[in-house]
Amino acid sequence: MKRKTLLPIVLLLVTVVALLYLINPQILKIIWFQKPGVKTYESFPLREMQKSPNPFVFPENRVVKNSLDSVLVKNWEGEMIPFSHYFEAGNLLAFLVIKNDTLVYETYGQGYERNTISNTFSIGKSMISIVTGKALELGFIQSTEQKITDFLPEFKGNPDFNDIRIEDLLNMKSGFKFKRAGDGIVSDLFCDEAKFYYTSSLKKDLLKVKSDTLPGQRWKYSNLDPLILTWIIEKATGRFVSDFFEQEIWHPIGAEHNGSWGIDHKNGLENSPSSFQCSAIDLAKIGRLMLKNGARGSTQILSPDWIEKSIAIQPENRANTAKGMQRATHQYYWWLPQEDFEGDFSAEGLRGQRLYVDPNKNIIIVQFANGGYGGYPYRTIAKHFAENLD
Image (tube, rainbow, N blue to C red; front, side, top):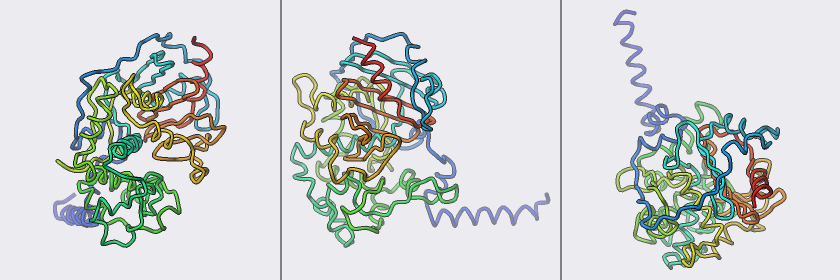
């Protein structure tokens, strides 16, 4: 092709890219990275949490590594398949089972090891729920009935925000417009989910969001509610959420490895709904915190009352969604199965990240994945270990 013919094409492409950038400054990142993987976070600024000076180590009584291979579990289509097929099809990276406070099963894939750090994506929302409870306990927040404008006067100029309570944010009932990915390639490029994942100006972008429903009226899964709550905690405590979480949660639970939160820019806000990173074994300790009613031995780390509010289905939240075969409802950023509710609950993230807790069987399961196969095998696996181990 001659240079004279090529030049107009190049100019056209440059013009198109420039226009797209003006419409959406994150567009180049979205095009380059597309759907984020478990290691995409490494390309962006981070705020690290140091491991605990007093680590907790699970006692081990591990069963044979292939003991789960032939156990039949339900995949996302409702078919019963061997766990080994579930592991392979879902590109699983880690799978841990803790029973009666003892590590009984631990296996990894694709080069992962116990100390490997992974993005947990929306499990970060559940971490924000935990740290909100701690902020309440310490008096930085007086009540979940407080308005967001009590902490963020920046929103007072927008009448849509005047009546939004912290309680509304915790239950994803703020009424904010939020377009998720999943409606096609072009739509995904301009969706809010991609925009707020890749933005370098979270606070500025949050001030531009709009409502389409009155607060408290409608549940809608959104990253905006936990992001604004993250900003509130920062304002209320006078500290970065990462630092507050490290001191009040990460160190007390006995994290063995460093963790991190993605931030939009240096000294910026934590991208809490999408970028909380840790090892699988340390995520299990978050499950232990919830299972032990907020205690580690004689030390009370998190209020039992807050945990009860987080994992007991509130009547007003029942059937607000029906996620998966277990028809899970969403409350305080935890997923609670409504189908034959047994008191079990989970934190869940993109690509198959899972933290599952069954208090009745005293079992914690952690799954890391890079594909996400769907399905909900955790009850079956919990039952298997409950019945086959003393």
